[in-house]
View 1 (cartoon, rainbow, N blue to C red):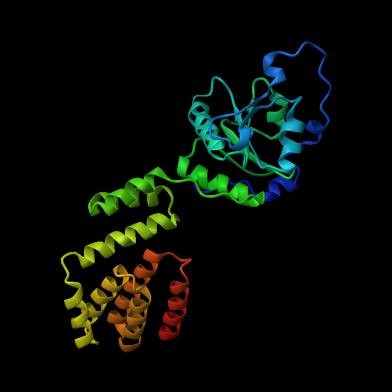
View 2: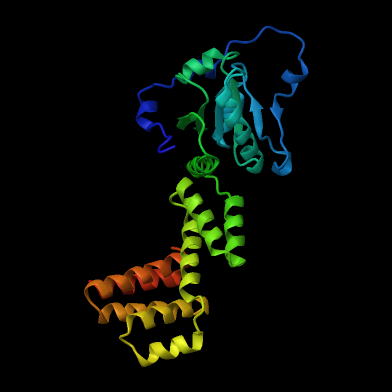
Length: 305
């Protein structure tokens, strides 16, 4: 899913006109069936019994989707029994809704039973998924997408709806981290690269991959001897890089950053670029939110320019 979003201009041009659904015609009176009396389904994992999944009809669309979205983001899943791709996507959406613990609600619309809703949303193929926030659709995508990208899309919807939720644990990262901690660097690298292939901007996977490189560079090194060699040879680039790696692993990241920023100031050309790239890789290990990284980035910029 390179970009599942439908731009806001589509909505502002009136491509999705929900006015008819805001005032649905009253349904004929008849005894309520169990499904009618309890349209909302709760799945395991919802906090405090919160609603996770709702089967929506035209008669309930206003209350269950439009009005509910004023306080809670609603993701609308257009599906049909005959749709094989829907059978792949819908269970994933349902599971993620349960994980959300009530932070958002999944509204399922059977397009065969509710063709007017599908027509209002200009649904031309299914599965089709819309996000509704504040009574208006804000984003959409069609087709089956990888779970990792689906999670990212849902997080973006929640942020748009003003919802602050913790990122769920990613079992892929757990597997990669376990491999790293056990010393299986090849397996860890494969796992981190697989995550980045699916989610190129995954900061945790980027940090993990940088840690793999760090672990490989210091393998077999004598920490004390490496630091002593760097002190004795301040202009030996390789000695300084190894010393910085060891300092990072020893919890002295700020000293490592200062060491390499100083080396950037004393070098030029290819050597300088090598030092800069090495320092950036150490920044990646810590992550962009580390205050020491922010300070060292400013120092690096000053040294370069």
